[in-house]
Image (cartoon, rainbow, N blue to C red; front, side, top):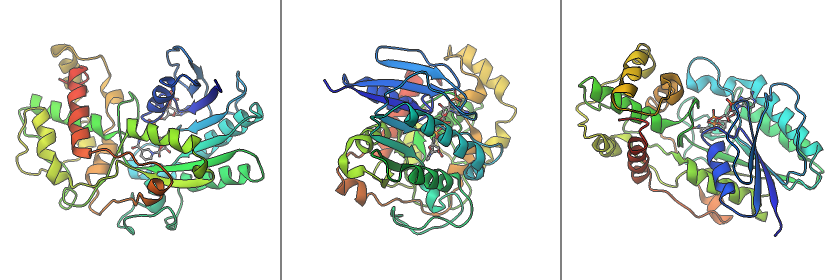
Length: 349
Ligand SMILES: NC(=O)c1ccc[n+]([C@@H]2O[C@H](COP(=O)([O-])OP(=O)(O)OC[C@H]3O[C@@H](n4cnc5c(N)ncnc54)[C@H](OP(=O)(O)O)[C@@H]3O)[C@@H](O)[C@H]2O)c1
């Protein structure tokens, strides 16, 4: 068997975890997972604790593939994370340059960026966005990461691929950006407070077109991008492959919790939830939930960001389909499945 050795950088994140799991299920992959927190080793998966803000010296060699899914958020609004340039550029440089140094058989580096490349976080933009569309004006750490990686790769035998997902749907305690825990904990808290599962976004947000990316589906795409010859030195949009309006799917999400939606009620989740940690702690005890701290189970600024997008958010997926990635996910069914799973696994009541 021709065994491949992957290094997943950011291995405990809302994408990294799922990439590790995807590769660990395949007999011909060995995985090293890097993050500051230590993961639990299992057959063919070893976790390495390292802070990539500082230059890095690997304690392994011979990587064939790198999946770069590390990320540092900044304080404040989620829309501003894109301007957190220095740490996000430095972590990529430290990780990839060090891993490349000890990996003469390196084949591909998969860099995960996102649709903020097009300015989805800033206001209306050309939709459906194509990979060849221009970068948004202004700063974004994706631009620094892409420019560094493509320059560093030039003239070498390995290649890169860049993936641009939108609003990940999975579970990774401590992540700054995942919408499913926002919906799940919002529903649970409102139910506890005797309130409806009202749409909390401002007018126009529930009726614009939106798209998301299932974390498991994204891991499938990352594996394809790492191994398909057509993906060498190419960028791809990766989403579920469908579009929806929150207004249309919100009632089905409320049904998972047996809740009615009532009328939309615009709400800053960050402000409203600021004093609710004691209520959450009481709910954890009352309903025998998994003991996640309030601030690690959910990140409200991300909810406010996603739920207050009043313009269409749409990626064109033609290129990934033409290059061989055909999987799609029904987003409404995905939300129902994941929210049901969150309840079953006692993350929320
Ligand atoms: N989540 C989304 O909805 C979404 C959507 C589109 C694009 N993206 C992009 O995808 C990329 C990955 O984001 P994500 O949401 O998957 O992030 P995430 O869930 O927050 O995961 C980040 C990972 O990086 C690790 N990390 C952070 N600082 C580190 C450091 N100094 N040294 C080593 N490891 C470090 C974290 O683990 P430790 O904290 O233990 O170190 C974690 O494993 C970002 O560029 C993001 O913009 C995300």
